[in-house]
Image (cartoon, rainbow, N blue to C red; front, side):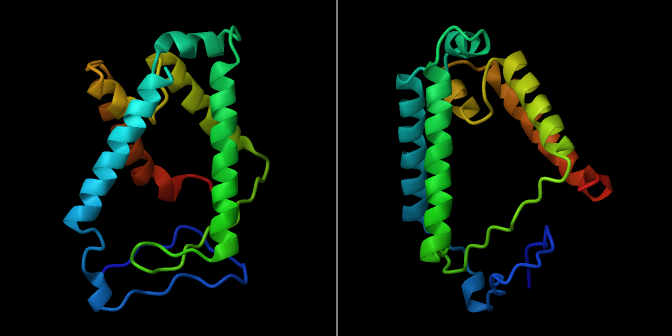
Length: 169
């Protein structure tokens, strides 16, 4: 029986997700659901394109503090995420496979890991001219050079997975 590794130990009193039984081991995603997710992704890509979030010129304006547009979009995304997480916790929402959603508490510590991670993220964003989120939308818009950024992001994610047990968390 496959199970996800426990990433963090939590001393919270919130219930942990339960181990699925054999019958719920079937894939939770039907063909219809996958088509829906594909269409939602395409719609999101269109929204990113129409809002010019993909434009390297808009990103340059942001980093040069020439326009508040990108900052407004980022702040609105943070607000939507905060409200969404609050609603998930408040309503006790479940995954599509009916498992409880548990969001473990984060400890800031000295904040070094967040500062270092944010710096690496920002450098990557500045060097590529794109946030990692819309990389696929950029490739879909014909900016095929971003495929190299996708491969690099995947390689970095894989490297983190390999090094994670040896990193100070």
